[in-house]
Length: 156
Image (cartoon, rainbow, N blue to C red; front, side, top):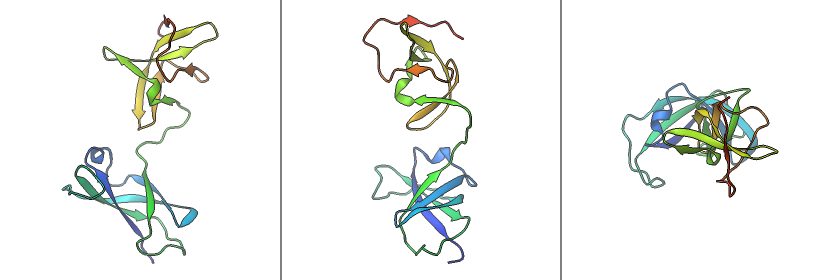
């Protein structure tokens, strides 16, 4: 196989997040440890009903940068579309971020107490969110509402 593509379907709720040219990391169930990079070459203009989704899905075609001797037609693949790439950033689990009156905050654990710390967030996915302001490396945040009274931290 000189040219390899991967055909996937993306839910309509997520389709606006991707674009032609986005990088994709492709792995294969039958080829443990094999990862091939690729890029999105086309996105269907119209969504369609698909048996695996409870909403419309859009067909996305990914061209792989190279092939592997172990690849066979119709192999199952896992396709991770890379929406953003950030280095040297602070991120926290999405479940640790709370919102009140449009303001986002976390509960920061210090040796003396627990403080409600306002934060400014950036890019997020289903699991984590980038913290642009309000935390520093090594800060400990709670994953749920504290059972004890908290202090309101001054913005840093």
